[in-house]
Image 1: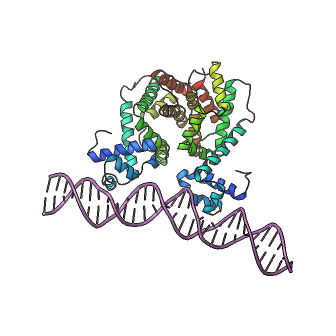
Image 2: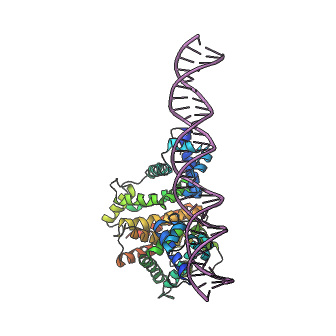
Image 3: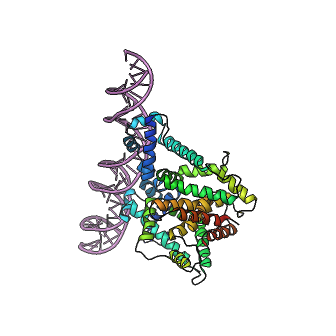
Length: 192
Length: 192
DNA sequence: TAAAAACGAATGATCATTCATTCGCAGCAC
DNA sequence: GTGCTGCGAATGAATGATCATTCGTTTTTA
């Protein structure tokens, strides 16, 4: 959120993020967004072409922030295991410290938006991210099991995503020690 | 679906299952269900009190079928590892052979229905299933890591769920060998 | 022919989006 | 300072679409 040009624009983004995180896409009608943002319904359309565009813009904003944070203190050049542990722990801590953003991202990933995004990630021409790079590298050097990249992603990040969700649903109480052991367990799933 | 009392009732269930699996809950309006079932909209309400009840009934029907199949050839009394491999492989094969049912279940689990169901599973008073039993047992005997049950579930079944999804989205090509290696990798995540 | 089952148009709710109107203010003349 | 003018920003009631559900009517069944 924070530094966005324009008061209104920022308020709309924040309101949408909160409503989607708390009630899902279908619990975030534009009328409710407008009310929470302290803005008239029509005003939203001065800043965003449609609800779709609004959602996508928020997603890309959050994704950028996530990767920016991820790269702080990233152990470039270290063994794959260290790099993986850094990513995994960062992911979980990020979700715990930014529950609204985490829940928005969860909603996004479980929607048609998310499927399209995932397809793009594996088949698209866009440049691959550090995580992709890490696994491609670790498979090549025989550090992790010889499995398709999609499977390696599922084995490691699906559990972490679910563990975070269980945390903010109050199913599981996470602390630093438990987080570390979870991330290590995910590494055990893929390491040779 | 199959043996359901009444032609119409069965047709309605099948139509709903298909539409939800293919287009999600919001792509399954009652009018469309009625049309696909070859039935008038009002008729649905002779068989089901509401859309909610219809969805829940389908879910419980599928859950029962799943556990029924799961118990065929279940290696009761064998080590935890064998029991887990049986469950994991059955899960993936079941999803591949019943893609409509698998996708319906996926939609269900990613919805408010699913959250309530999960809460019930961990905190409810209903009797625990074989899977719950397996992990409780394996933790007690020190066969798997000392982690909360919710975490053990996430570490093992979240990846499998995702792997199945990637299969019917054509992101990953699964065969028996790959399935076995995936399930074993999940076991590696939790075993001591 | 009477009861049961099925029908499907009508109802009322909820949305995203639009657009005719109003608001607030910057610049200007006196 | 005061009054006027023009314009982009903001408004929110209205629109049209989409749903779940209802109910008066028709058809089927026994």
